[in-house]
Amino acid sequence: MKRVLSGIQPSGKLTLGNYLGALKHFVTMQDEFESYFMIVDLHAITTPQDPAALREQIESVATLFVAAGLNPEKSSIFLQSHVSAHAELGWLMTTMSYMGELERMTQFKDKSAGKESIPTGLFVYPTLMAADILLYNADFVPVGDDQKQHLELTRDLAERFNHRYGQTFHTPEPLIQKFGARIMSLDDASTKMSKSNPNEGSYVAMLDEPGKIRKKIKRATTDSEMRVHYDKTNKPEISNLMSIYAHCAGLTLEQIEQEFEGKGYGDFKKALAERVVEVLEPIQQRYEKLRASGDIYDILKLGAQRAEETAQQKLQEAKEKMGFLLPR
Ligand code: ATP
Ligand code: MG
Image (tube, rainbow, N blue to C red; front, side, top):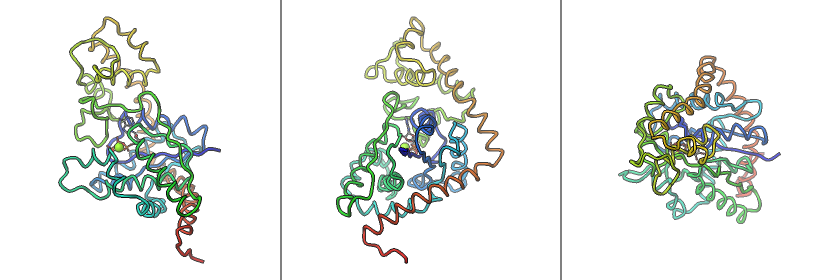
């Protein structure tokens, strides 16, 4: 059976972008593939986190995975930090990488822009991500469009390792959803929606209550033409909102244009907010129940046990190939 693996950082509150670009696809894929979905907490600390807030976010993201439809019987759901092979292979992969290729990563450029002191973790982030994927011989990695470059690097590192030490790692295929793979910010359609954006109005969080969702969408930036028409170049803001609508309602852009012909942005935004609420409200209800039950700890324990088995085997194989003496 083909294997799928992906992760989300507990670096803030999960957004609608995380749901539409990643989590939603995890849920459909778990029926078809052997699935590993993790909360990549080691990645979250590449930018400073408050310990209490981090703990809360980790539990919240894990609970949201299940509330959104991941089934612990079908998928291994686990915390990256519970499987120590990630950090260890991450180091080995760092030694396989070059400064130049890491410097070219746009996520690094974006996240380090304007910072006086740039955390080293931010720089080597992609080598840890490569380890995450390669430990499991993943065939497919469903990610948003923003992670494509990191996946290409993962393939390069795997090929470099295989070339130097002999066939060890399987090179994964990126699975980037063609349409709506990048949801943009509500206040600025030139930047992607991100949970670590300090401006709360830039994203809809998956756990935002309906009133808040309506307010945020009402305030979303639009142009002054007042015509619901998809044109990514000239009307990036409304085009982004339309793609959110399309995803949430399961409609095509043409159908949306028809539905709102002759209507203004006010009507469109009201309808959009309802579509988003329809998608998120049932998830929020399941979230509340699961969070109160405390069951997530058992789910994570089971997930880590399953992941550990696969990951350790691959780590030992890589270490042996590199010339480490394995314990006897
Ligand atoms: P951060 O700002 O901390 O980087 P993030 O919102 O970018 O947070 P990640 O944890 O980095 O979230 O990414 C988790 C998954 O969500 C990845 O597969 C990523 O490609 C996807 N993703 C993130 N933002 C978007 C977006 N705006 N549209 C579509 N997919 C997204
Ligand atoms: Mg990100």
